[in-house]
Length: 450
Image 1 (cartoon, helix red, strand yellow):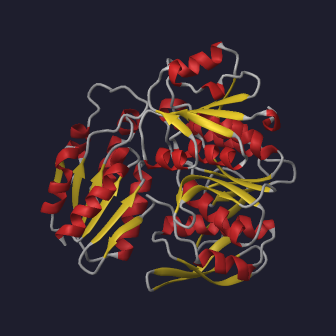
Image 2 (cartoon, one colour):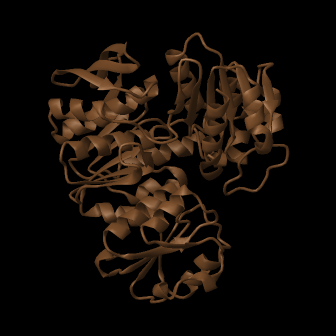
Image 3 (cartoon, rainbow, N blue to C red):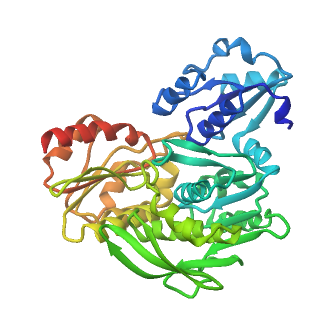
């Protein structure tokens, strides 16, 4: 694919977080960008503000004439789009160049020094930390993020094209389209079993990804994973390890042991050991790239986080409201660890919206165990995303397995009222579905009530 001869780019599923980052990239390149999505969101509104034409009905008649030229129009789609999609099938049948998002990302990164972040958890936070470190250290970098950075209010950091930072997504084996110079693997917990069938196939895909690294490239792996590479971990014997951890005014202060020296006095403000691990691997990759300690320390201290990743919406002495994207049992465990570390003596209410019937079915016992750790649990119905219902797989079924008497199944329409009835001073909303659209309403209601 020669992007230099493409003037128009049409996205099917343009509101997706990864798709919209690509759309922003092509807008910045001066191309004509448009597309379709099922639902209007803050992300699509932001793209419209950039001049992107978007519609929300799957009908060929809505495709703008600007995207009718087969020769200079690229069509990009996400695997979440069903095969029966009218516009997708139209573009394919008419001979347009149609590519998955991951393939386009692979093409963009080919001519750059590419740093790729893989793993079943931690990709978005790690990628955004890494992109921020490189940007603040004046590297000519473009970073494609799987979330909205609090520092940039965007899922794209654009400061040049010599270096790219990308999420290497294991879903649909998308990361096998990449050929990075540096890559890391943060975790390999079982997930996406609707795609892989079993956990051993998922592990095999990460092994295949590790072989995609360019000659003389470097692979970084979380200590304990069954793949060879430069190791990293917290207070252990890894090649890169966090040492001397203190919590000062709600922030971590720590040192980093490298293979050669000890780098002292880093400050990082995101709660949770999982986030500390994400910061460490971003630092390790930056150090190996050649960036100096003083600049990295300054850059890390200024990092603010990613929206919907342990995001504070209310933070007072009497009430705390945090929202998080966690949608896997291990991610919920990480959120629980973080909230208990920050608020050890306070009652915590967790509101969870399960994401996907298949994931709920595959990990129902693990979800129940994770959620049982909270003091009070509210469950919303399962968010289906790309899936059809599976008989017997419901939030009511999951609720029955939670070993906690303070639990309840609620509808979205009654959610705010139910939350207000709780006396918990710490409230969490958790999930990868449309629960994120409820956050502003919950925040407003709690602010008025307090």
